[in-house]
Length: 87
Image 1 (cartoon, rainbow, N blue to C red):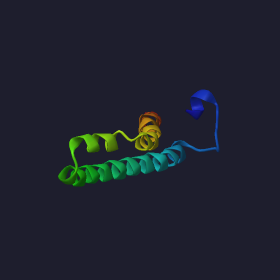
Image 2: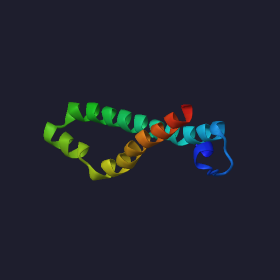
Image 3: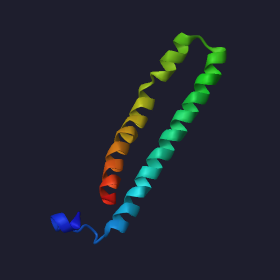
């Protein structure tokens, strides 16, 4: 990218940029996996004790959507940038 645009940010090469992008990608994936696995556990426990109407209301919680939405939208962008470094 630096050779095409003549723009150097922090004087990183390809390896430095790749390692810089692996941190947010790994953190985002870890967050999503833990959030969805805890959601599955909650649904399994709730399905044994509650009616489907109560479970649907808990899944549609806006706080969960607000916390998972930006992280989920960030992953394709980071993967595309990471894929650009491999070419």
